[in-house]
Image (cartoon, rainbow, N blue to C red):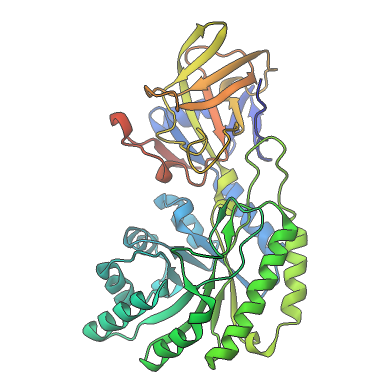
Length: 408
């Protein structure tokens, strides 16, 4: 038997069945027209943002990282909850603008921006987080061609990384950002060319649950930004401090101590150096805002026994929840939080593996999990799938196609 991850707080049973947003899973599936289905709780997202704001210094602005979940109704919701969006492609730019978000509240990062993407962002008035000197010069040339003053910031590749993070985005050789030592000269070049100087972007890592590591990282980001500002010789209007806030996925994971993070950051803000006295401070968060608010519902198509093992075969799988299958950045596969949605109040009584419909042994949703007895027609719920689920999975693999999505 292998343990399941912890089901996020806020999910309850209604008539013995999992309820999301006050409605039973089976009713949501009927409304959506079938399974597989991602359901996102708008109330849980709003509560998370409100809790964040209560824990953070009033000077801190919140940006949503669209890459976490670009579902259009969810973006429309987020537009009213946060102060801006961070995007990483021309496609995300289109979705962000379609949501009603102001172009001036968007920042665009990513190491491989095409000329057409740079032009679209410049014309719209989006802040570009430059990833290299070459990209800076392309952006300046394009801006000159279209006759628009570009809004330019520099993404810094810091000498440090976020300890314990799931993905390390800083420190050493990286495709992301400009090395610390090269930033001042490039910033002066950008400013001298007539661009609107928008500041710095420092993203050292993601998916960290260690509050002390995040506190340390944020302190180092502020120190770095102050030093670079002094070397650049121009005021720093904007500092995107990145994010890195993780959520519990696996057995033994503990929620991030947000009070510790917010308290420590507040103390640092109260004692900021002169270089940052007028700087707008931003946290860029994705999965922390939406990850635990999402549930993937998939229906059991077959129950089978093989050499003494029980398998629940579903109509979903890794083509929609690649991360939950263990094939998205994890070294050792562990179980996400999973439940039998239609038997949410029932006691577990058997060990079974939940697998998808693809003809590959990689398609494992839950392995040797202790679950209530389930059969054909039951719904399986995979939690913590509000981020890096539908848009981060190979939906076209084996011709399966995308899952349905619903915001409630």
